[in-house]
Length: 372
Image 1 (cartoon, rainbow, N blue to C red):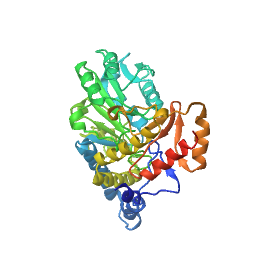
Image 2: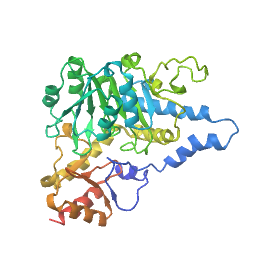
Image 3: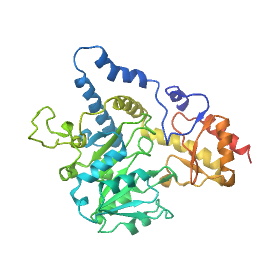
Image 4: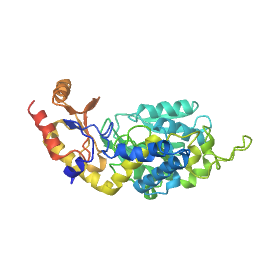
């Protein structure tokens, strides 16, 4: 099936294994963008806002299908940092001095930057980077009653690890803590059912496994938390009636769109909606299964170099390979052969998507093995 699906993507010559960074665009993306965004603007004298806003509604419904929840609990955002800033500034519990946020030292740094600037009087407690964040006991030992919110990256792109989010969310509830999950690195490749997990909040984006390019991020607010959220960064689309036009009256939108803000960006969501609808037809379970099959081929052949988890429940969608002193040599060799990967402190990152087939994996393995 993947050989057929490979034809649906824009793939240049060589082997692309960088979906943890930017997913490859669909061939249909340009046409879908033209029909949804350009056509209403170009082909009529009527202002296109009615058609453009329908793109956002479709985007919300596509997210609802992906994450198994209601569409009006999702709000578009420009990126995760902006969405996170809006979110934490809206929660009264986090506004008091010395509120406590728990995160890991291996979280994406932008998340820590955003929280500290948005909440200058908070205390950020870090799970030390040397501890195993795939271990439920590690989280349990750090989640206590004085923690206000637990920030959880579903997966960690630099280590190839997957956090036990179900256990973390449940333990946070027992301790009276709020929970916030970041799905930037798992959305579209690891199944997530928000109705079952029932966290308080979620942030995510579409640039990686959802193959949608930058700009189509989102917030999800658990409906029972919505009335507790009072966004500070608002605009006319945060209003319950954006077209009321009464400067003396503001009332929050009754849905998660209270986080939307001013005149919204539209074009990224036209591309993202097309991608989300495409992947919905394939099924995220199939995407994960294919990813795991390719990962198994990699880790079996390159077991001596694999430093990311081998257990599927602790494994992200990315394999981390450490070649020690030969790391730079291996990177240079792969670049020479037009094999696209990247490297971080722990090693070379390799991410097979649905457009990655067995031949791609064997090409990568053969090039590595030829060096040893």
